[in-house]
Length: 455
Ligand code: ARG
Image (cartoon, rainbow, N blue to C red; front, side):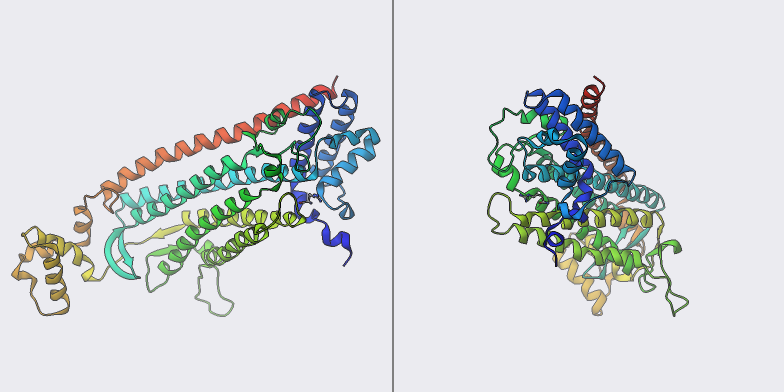
């Protein structure tokens, strides 16, 4: 195994190409503003950074593995084209602060993409919940996978809505710790050049700098944190997937998945398998693995930079890619499932019968025992309740009788849907703000670069 091949990271970090170009532009604008480099050299640097970017966009930039990584490839391009003088572009910067800055730039972008996808999923769930609530789709709710109490499909859907909005909030919270700029920390100890770290951070659309230069280059807890958020998200998604798998069996018959989202068997002509949900369920293991991967890399890793850190990007990008694919496909599948009313075991109203008995001044535990005895023994409930009182207690009635906040009752579900719609709007507003901040940084950088190039 050639050493260069073993140590290179190009296959993974070529995804940082655009972030790295932006990084170099912002860094050199700062060096220029602080009087560290000359305008005419900056002009050359920007000219060839733009050229490299264009080539990359056109799929014409030739990445050289022997140069180790994307950072060295870009620097070499600018130096080869612009001459030795352009070598100032790396003043007061190390690849240690450079790579983690790029990684944070891409991570925040992927975090916003994930939030966007989760928003779409939540909206699809809400829409379905609203329709189902109007159609009063009643099916059994389960504990221990045994029919427990009648419930509403809309209420079931809203439970997942709430889980996924918590996933959004977790990512949003992590975002505050992602969106901090390490650039200007150099190798780890800072630099003797009179740089302006806040200015670079502003150009790169960061909320602030990550102050301690050693912490800035050495910490990867933001990677562990976002991967743990994604792992938790997948645990929620895998539970939904599992329910879709079992509820769509003929044994349960609660869900019908549109044919487009099922696959056939190579031998059994009748099969319509829920492969999408199964794959989402199955991929969850890898996302947990990616979290354990980064945690193990970080365990007992001495400060500051060690080459082990190069291995952070593989699990990071992999989890984001897989999670986003899983959310997108689940959203589509969910828009194409039908939740079905289901005839339930007649005992499913047992708890409501006990509740009814308490209106006859019977304490709940006694009422519970009476109903249990009527099911499993030979006690006749008519000793306590009139025939009509019993017969009126249909699953619909049980559901209608529920009054507690958050319960599976159509009115309560309606109130929750309204409230959740508002929550979606608030998340959208925060998302727009985050994206705007990045765009503003990008715009500012490009304007300043253009200004220098055209002067
Ligand atoms: N390819 C490296 C990484 O991804 C870049 C940083 C290299 N730094 C160093 N001191 N060798 O981590």
